[in-house]
Length: 101
Image (cartoon, rainbow, N blue to C red; front, side):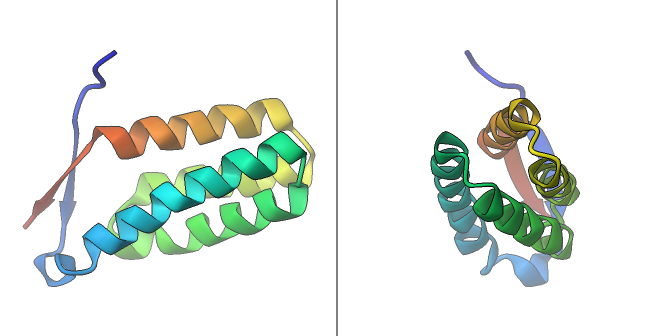
């Protein structure tokens, strides 16, 4: 299934940082999936909190939104919602096309 591209406009001053930033978000997805599989709410909350904090600063407001949702869902032990948000984050990262302007 091909996902529709999502254009994300990023400040050109961040161009050198974005590839590493996005690689780290892919690593976060693996951590989240493993934590969800083990029911590790503390790890889910921690990674969600981290995503909430870093997304907007790099121009990815959706990452901030999804991270906040993961963190909040971990607090109330809503694993169904957490799994959906991890899926949404995965889809988002696979769909973005970064433009520097």
